[in-house]
Length: 296
Image (cartoon, rainbow, N blue to C red; front, side):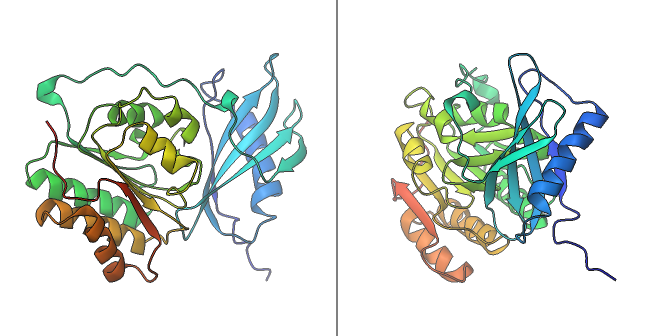
């Protein structure tokens, strides 16, 4: 009996586009067929899910598919652009694809929440189907809530571009995302939060947040400097590809140390990585490395 391909069961999700809120069943099947045959089944890298964004020509015909391929064992996203014909017939693959300005919408004008309802901490994951990701978000949410912080928990579909933009511009005290990323951004439930989008955010709109992206490669240019330039107080993220499982343990340890024990953030990250991760130097921290002191 022939062994199954490592990506035979990988889930393929077709995202809404700017001109299409949803795709007909036959269209979705055609898109999934192109992705499965030309990306998933031609790769030996295991993927758990692929999110696909469709770009249309001015006449409405499809011209390309952008595939955000989420790895199974690390929080790494590989991005591929697949050119297709008007009937979704395969044409070519661009393996070195990077987001362009046309892929990024302007940062929306934030709507300030009512003071009495204003959250202070957000813990989120667009991939709650990964048990350790969901468990970490639940742990952090419960811990911070018990400590008296007003918290928001975003799981799955709620970990969306609109919600991330709303809360990242809400002058929170802490924001945690657990999910897939790369040097250019992070994958959310309905799209890609690109450094280009962050670069377009109004200055100081991220201040005074401590932002922790438990994602691969995010503590590198161009994403890391874009986050700091937008006004983040402190940013923590993966320097390299972060293992699913051990990386969440570092994240949980970090927030436990700075919230419950009031230890300095820089020293906490180093100590937590030493205690919880198999390899040192895989996480980075920039900005204020001192104690977590919420600013009213």
